[in-house]
Length: 551
Image 1 (tube, rainbow, N blue to C red):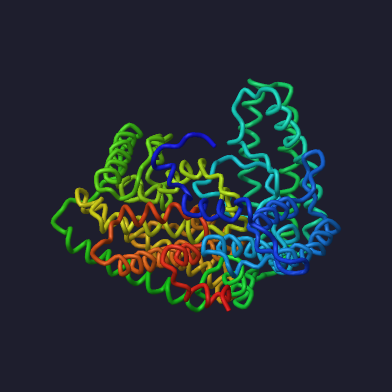
Image 2 (cartoon, one colour):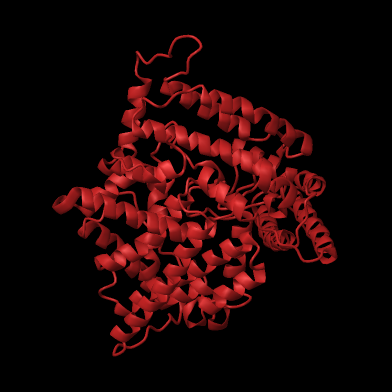
């Protein structure tokens, strides 16, 4: 393991110690025929399951054919039996949490085979190329294994990296040929979002072709062939989409509830989440109106007028935010933690989408959400045997998105925006938008709303008219939530879980509550479901009992 900074050394220290104790010499299985109590068996099963859930890849093409998926589904009970042969009852909480993480991942694979069928019903699953690094532990929606992920490569390409790139680029036509055969469960909305994705991929391949013509002329023809394959696939989707009648592609309330409980380990069902999101929407609007009364004698915020002005504003916001974290002892900020101050191009007023409008008015309001990037830096030092990487099926969403959303309001309350009172208004606008689109997530899956109605609701219920009816952000978001149920709501119920945890922790500590201690402890638990973190940090098991994890 590499040497760490003092802050880095705290990473997952608690759970690492528990795992080390379980794996220490002298840990033994029970008598023959009895369940194992050896943590090493759990770690080994975790590694085996991760290998098993990946499809076979031949010449860069992952196998999602009906035969391959049927074979995978048939073998899943074997892994469940191995998990059931491990008895965690005598383990401490962190090790029991690791057991539940693995069970949740197995449930996620079952749900894919039983309900979601992304390889059969989601054209966007067959990503030909991805161009950006997500701010969360893994890509937000389901997509094929071993995708051509451009952030993995530095140009000009050299050695093994170039050959790997060549293999993946050359595989694009075969991947899309397989997709045509696999996509047998057709839904109009999912096809629409597949078309949108392919439009973005075509632009990415055009840009990539230009780069390769300069850096690697020998690879440029492969980019041209990939572009042609994506164009042909998009035309096929458009033809099929035009022939479809209206469909409702949500998974239904019963399936949604099972997914939340058994995969994402969320103690709130569909009805609970509707109530939570409606309450947060109402609260955000009321809080915004009070902020506007408070600030009515102050000049309004004016959006930046040039890219140079925006760069200056962003640098000031980043410096203010990081300085606030350190000076107010919010949590331990390692020396290698930083945030980008790059702005890029300037977006004219008539072309600004929701987040661009927020940022151009004041960058500081959204800097707390960028805790994502600080977390990613911390997680690079994480080598825990089970929590050392992104959990499958976005099981991390309540923790990652819930923290980032909750941190916005937490930092507002802690005083980050005291020097910019008008920016406080932006915090409530952000929350209103997230609550409105979360309700769209819920209502699309219940079948109560169409995708168009979910978009219209967000347009109407986001303050100041900052969401356009044809805005790329809101359409992209609702499309993601259709493909990845519950992701939109995780921002809001995850925020509620963070607040609940902080309240429990503060009650337990009484006058000894220290915010830095809370967050430093919180971060040692890694990016796992919020319900499990609460169990570890407080010992309170009401939520995990409700989830059926304790009998």
